[in-house]
Length: 394
Image (cartoon, rainbow, N blue to C red; front, side, top):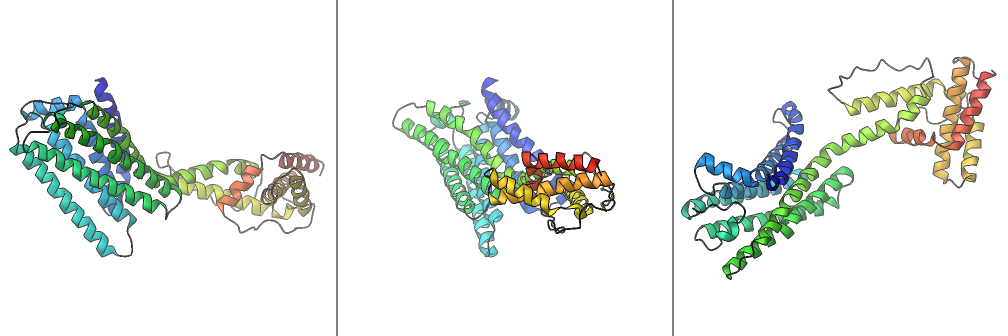
């Protein structure tokens, strides 16, 4: 079972990734071709890993009654996974020439579909009557038809992994953020197959032709299978969850500012829409928190004191802060002081004339997140304490 564990765990991770995308796939009702392709690729990859486990190989022989039945099945799944990877990357990237993309996709499907059929035919024509769980490639490297089957799947797999790796890496130079990270992880995952699995198996097979028995290379090749497959899965998942993770980080970053402006009463915030716990709509939650903060800043804008902003700005510059950081600290200090004065006067007549403050119509989450981080500054904390004391004496 120890030899099976890494394959079952890795295959289970890919299967779990596929299941996590299943609700979105059901909601799309087949209209999202890209999501459907990713789910199919994750499912095939999981099947490859689960089928490669030695215990699964024995189980398939017992169920089908065909010795080494798992070998052509694994080769077909691996070849199909390779071809599907190229098709997915081609369509994922897209381009101005849609006809060319479709033409290349059809050619790839035709070529790799033919390879899958040939693998099955060659296995049926050959003689693989002695079961080999982990050394099938080297044991049958000189057997007619089986030899050709092994070479065919190795060639198809090498071409596909190299092509997919190059496509992903070249595309990563043109994009940013989560997509770039995902593409580069994909490129590394595919390259591990091309630079690790394929050369190791090919050298082991060639050594068998020369009369040597280098089966240890098969173990080397198998050791690269699981991590490379997991990297491929991560590479496809990161661009999908990347925007959501960014929204989650921004939502968390705004928490200190939301807490700071909470005492402001009379803000024109609409009643937040109820969001069930089983539907973590991060974008909606982020929008609600952003609106909550902005409305309360608007409600206390008449308390903005430019003297406080100038004081905080000068203090920040004196503490070696950059001009940009000093400006953010100054805005945070003025907002925090205004909140304290608003709370002290219950929103009645402000103690200073309404000066010009930050852009009241600004709704950029990144700016609010910067202000939220600036609340941790000692300068802001000191000014806020002073404003609380002054407000208590009003």
